[in-house]
Image 1 (cartoon, helix red, strand yellow):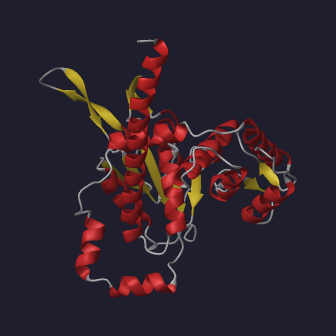
Image 2 (spheres, one colour):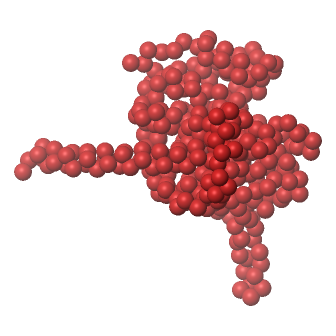
Length: 331
């Protein structure tokens, strides 16, 4: 048998396996999407961005009013993944070791034992992150950037799917500590959920207590495993980005650094995060390549968490950037 024949047989066997894997991945995404839509009614656009952030291996900042479903969204996402869920209720007296864990001396063994904190989870909810001190906020920096924490000079790795959802209330600023730019840049995007529309509110009022209990308690068994999430994240990372599209992204990034109304533009880390989110967005749209439109559609949540605008609204500045930058003919 010739090598050419062997190669053809290998391709014939591998192609159906690849197609089957792609089909299973799409089904897993749809299952998680339906579950999130069931608890956060009327917010399909925001849920798509949450999924894009998750599959891009980023972290999410939810900046919205109380009672809009931020905590419910985070809990449902963790339950839908079947992973470990950690929660921090951020308060002024919260210590860094309350997040990372600590070493405790065991009198019997005469050795120090490490007691892990809530950061050792698959999904970590940092509720009202701006209520705790900058010293404690910084304890999350290493975990978010490097997926590890260092305690007493010893590194402790986190899971590679570690995902942080932090929430903050933009209205009540009394006793709050604004997040520094260095920490904001660790987030892939900032989202506002907002109030549901009238149709969604009618559906919420019509839902039975049992339906709400099932949705909020996560009684339905997990449909997406952590291993499946890793596979999805690998598939997203392999989504093709044409050099012309990458050039367009660089043009936009450099425009943020030179814009007269922007005090702090996009960092190289922010640029990489923008591309990963665009890859995830293309994947959710059913494509294996990124278009300039994908870059544009995720621009607002990605840029609003890291741009420092001198005057005016960041949304208006972002729109001006989009309109002033030439879109390439990548085809």
